[in-house]
Amino acid sequence: MNVADLGARGPGEAWATGYEHAADGMRPMLYRWDGTAWSRDTTFPGAGEPGWLGEVQFVGDEVWIFRSNREGAGEILRRSAGRWSVVPLPQTMWNYQDFAAVPGAAWVVGEDDTGLKVLHYDGSRWTTQSTPDDVHFVMGVVARTATDAWAWASTSTGTAVLRWDGTAWRDANVPLPSNSNVHTILLEPSGRATISGTQYTDGGSRAYLMSWNGRTWRTSHPPLGATYAETLARGPDGALWLPVRSDRAFQSKYARVDGSRTTFSYGPERANAIDVKPRVLARAGSALLSFGTVEIYGSKPNLMSERLGG
Image 1: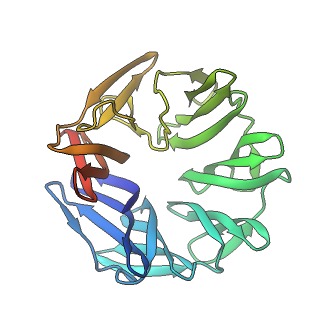
Image 2 (image 1 turned 120 degrees about the vertical axis):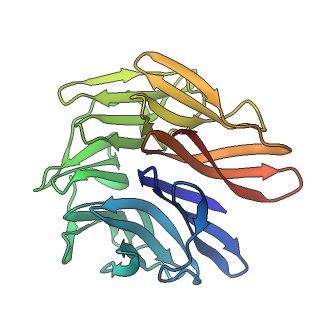
């Protein structure tokens, strides 16, 4: 099984997505947290058909989740007032790289047989958006509002950050470290933005974080080891949290980055575990929720979740 995303609206509602392997291919997987326990949801359209689920987004009172089926067709699952509906994409793509949604807008990025595609939904129809000429591939997209979206892309000169201002996608001119890539961008209602990635040097590689306060960028290199920091969460304590590679086979490990100070903590001990992997992390009210897999000696990986605080 594979965990794709975790989104939390508050302490009593969170959704985790992914897929599991079946004889005929991938099967979509969806779990809901009600504040007390996780339960599997099989009520969404296509729950029993081949395919996978991706990013979770909260749009007003609704939950939006990206889904792709075995034939490669993409769609958005929308849950409103306890009922699911579907918003189909206008075309099928070779791959769907990422999805983001906010009130009044949604984006899907990927590729078809003609190359890069950025699809935009305004609540009633889909259109295709152009990107700067030197962009070859868009790796991810996030949004704060319908007129403030960010993406990270591969260009003719390396990795770049793009920004949508309601009119066009433009190079945001973010001073990324040399010879680096971007893992993810965390946007916050306050206007802050945080970029995580890896910088490659002659001596190997090292993680970096870049923070934007609305005026300037600040770059730091916290001691995160070989972590691929694709999930970041702003904790209820104000610090940044992310799962990292653990040095204990029976426990998960998390990093807390607060300015220049980085500390680490471990999840609960799991008997007979040989690999504990929290994959995604989200703030749920006054707590942090993680979701991932744990491999117990002699069995296949099982789903696991951990909570800190609350």
